Length: 139
Image 1 (cartoon, one colour):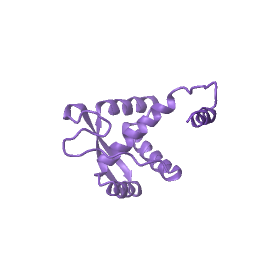
Image 2 (cartoon, helix red, strand yellow):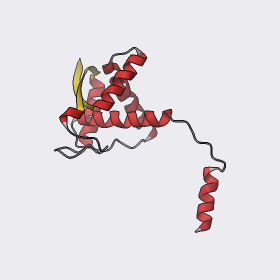
Image 3 (tube, one colour):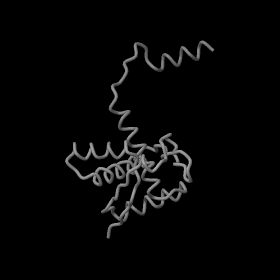
Image 4 (cartoon, rainbow, N blue to C red):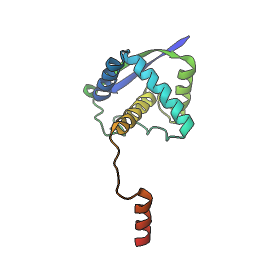
């Protein structure tokens, strides 16, 4: 049996999911499901920090986006494997969030990491270790 999960997304995040789905020839729900599975696997294996909390009750979300209803769209996610949903419930409870709010926090964090990874790397003329050493020596 599979559970169903509804998630509210900002317009920007919903657009990004739709574009990724189109590019990968997948349904938006598949993109969200794959992103959740990848995030859960990565955060377990590399000790990545859990997503920040989203403020409830009218305050602005932790990412500074508007919390107005006009700025959000709903996603209905079907076909979530029971094991995945149970894990999401456990992690959401630890953070004192609802499952949809926890999933939204994970998606926002994943989207931010994906954007960072797509940027070109900077080549320094001096190694980072050397810069740190120079800074320490100057103190």
